Image (cartoon, rainbow, N blue to C red):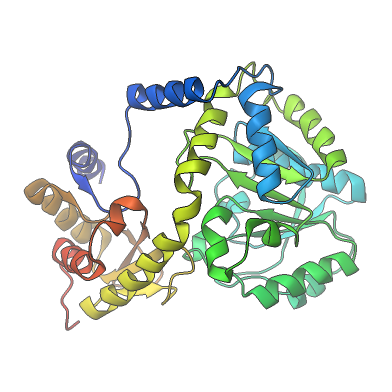
Length: 365
């Protein structure tokens, strides 16, 4: 697999990408940051105060209708600090969250090992949380958290009614509700709601600057003013108050202007693509994508499918999809497809056909 991965990386650097965004170069990214900072007369921050960081925090807080926003160098730090701050206030280290949460699967047990949080499963498996799920977690909770969307399930989102009911249940129980909103920019079109309407259902919301917005790094937490002060203290304790956060802050400001209004179009295109893929013999989850990112499934094993995909890129110069992994269903593989501006330049049916050729899927399977 390592040799195949090396081939894939080598050929994808010069291929035409359909999904996600092709990687930029450091020089091109830094030129873009410099041009934007000069055009908008942005000043340096110092230790996360003033300058471009302050401007970004103000814009994001206004967008999500919260009094304050605090920038962090990473979402890992941002979310752990937020949950710990809520737990300290409540006098309980217990946090209810989905067992498929990013915090559980991709942070090397950081919430428990670094900050001493006790994790309780709000949901298990491929589904989103409801008020009944919160009621089923007994005892005193420091906080509850949901992920919008739940990325490891194909980016599932709850219905608006379920989300409202969960928020009301948390407030009736006096449990602080936090949203992992790394992709909340991409989610609001699913409910046809504004960012502020969604954020109003939560006590705090984490947002990412580099996923949908395309920045180099960085995250923010929007929250009440008094919690913001506590988060700045936790950021310093955790080593996150860097001498300067200006570069990722400028990237975030660019992303808000370039991408914020386009995620509805990406989702609409993804819905058409998912339908076209099913006609080609693929399966998708969910059937109708909730955002512009979803899971696709094809018959075969990862080794054989990935060999065909890499050979296709080498021969055609088109990166029709990323690499595939074996799924939970024997004899099937899965991959994640993210539909951004490179994708929507194409006809969804044509892309589905190109994917079928690359993967070796038979229309009649």
